[in-house]
Image (cartoon, rainbow, N blue to C red; front, side, top):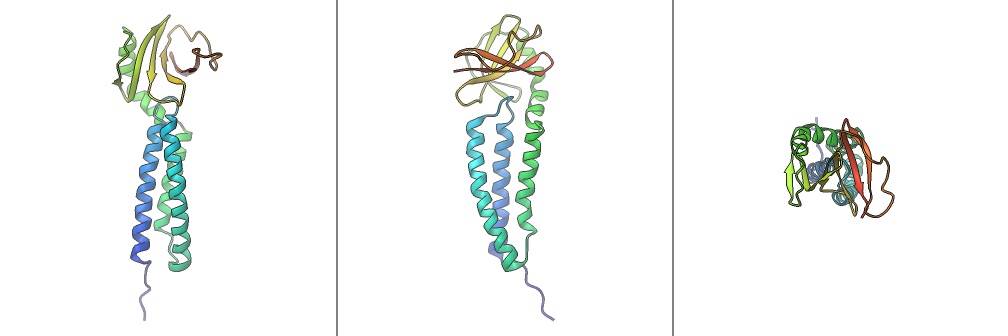
Length: 185
């Protein structure tokens, strides 16, 4: 009685390496969604790499099925991608980042001293802190061309919606007295 041979070692190694690379790229995507507005350059780069890895995964999956009748190892990558998509669609990265950072942000918002130096507050890389009437703006690393951030405005935002002109700030409610903002370049 012959023992059934499993998939070739090269196929298994490539499938595992592809799954690990997909996992790393998905970590970058989750990290890009930590700010209240997606950190677009990193997300775009990771999406392209994920597309290339998807093509590699597809070839490995077809070869694994037709040549070795094996698919178990190739199911890891799509499961990781689906889990990442679920986390991002449910806003888990930004919700967790804000929950972890809220205390530190509130402590910095109390005196709201204007600064232009980069600093880490909670999980956010803050580029600038600026006092405004009735609150405080935290310019956070991210965005593509426009500046983005979080605003602590206990009296409410002066304007809800998209920025109306260059230099204008548009606010969107986020959590309680906190708002996301975009300042048009």
